[in-house]
Image (cartoon, rainbow, N blue to C red; front, side, top):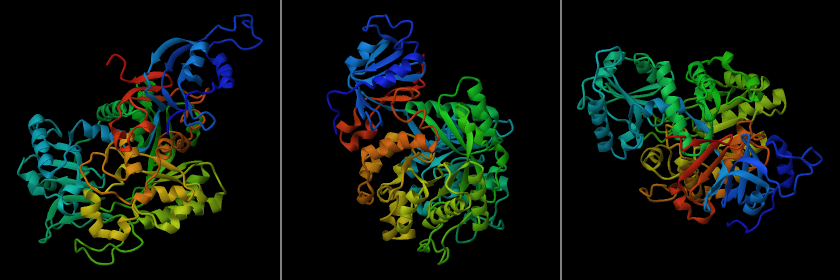
Length: 582
């Protein structure tokens, strides 16, 4: 789809915003000024392909910005005739509303990025080489906690049964090593770390957790779900300085990818205070919805952190959402399924995974949160977990009537076809991490033997839920996978590896259009975050959260989408990427 050659200026919006920009209005003191007088603007973006996400004016060539807001949208000639100020000729680059990441872990991900980050390793050999490099670059110290080597991001799909062995780490170093898996539901420890944590053959699996073991019953070094807490309780304490540094690293990355709005999933009180302190210090460069961890894995959460009134506060940080971990992941066979796993690991036939919150507790919790005006954000990978989440939302609606809380379910790797239409019927948003929807090693080597071809063929049903009336939004789940929205947008359209390393397509019938995915990361993301009245589309009067891309995505092959560069990111008209002076 190519933009038409001419566009109509939204004159009504331009006149209305003239007051905010200090411009004149009809009948005012300056009504006698010449008609050619131009209103002041802080910035004019022109000679661009402006995709507005506004159905009344889908395309434009230029945008005038002033006072942090969009003053006018129209042709290059119209904006030049109506406004004066700093002009940036974009030479045909694409302008979009800035991206929303509706599911991310920015602080923990940022901390990991500053530790031993293994997320770029494509083989076991590369993973081990990176760990050796980290060990050399950050040798053990004498201070409290300095002897540990910490990090994460290792790819579960590289190891048989997603189960790396402790001996691989033991061969590198004798210092204690603990590395979080890329999925966020697994950890990998060496023998020294296991001993520090007191984990041995005699240690029982905790409720809702798994200590992976060899044939003799000895821990292999891989810990799943709540078993990770056996290790994390002995790790060095994460300090306020660590969280601040991690948050700033994550913000810089997000802005570089055109992101100015983030749902910070599973936040606790310390993370919430980190975001608020950054806002007070004038260092926050994105809007944050702290989705407060509320239930799952036996953790009741802290309801005192929830603040539904923050939704209308006008600040950059809100705590009006609650996160529920309802199941685990397919890689550890902890995701909750309607039909049993095929038992490729010989752990016992008939297993259907874990539900972390009993039904009575789940339905009561969701109903209470819904009644209090809190948005509920559910982690659900397996089709049984998805169904239970939808059942809980239906129970809340039956008890409270329809609300505008905009609940959502994230991940949605497996959804039963009977449940596709329920998203639209219940007004529950489908929050996909679309980057996962191609046949990588996780799916072909780990998931396929565990669930079979029929279930693989209906993984990540983005197209089916959209066709059934559901609203699609996009999130990264960073640091589980790339934060770059363009990676996920490309995969949602092609259902293929955006890096071109893996052959094949994952269920092409579930592919969706570029229009769908741009809406998912802009207008629909803004709707989910209850800020669609302020951002998410390029309309006069809205805040100037914008991203400039090097190419018009509608004029390139879909396989080239993730090769497009972000040239400029604005938050309320303020440049946050490239970093000023950077």
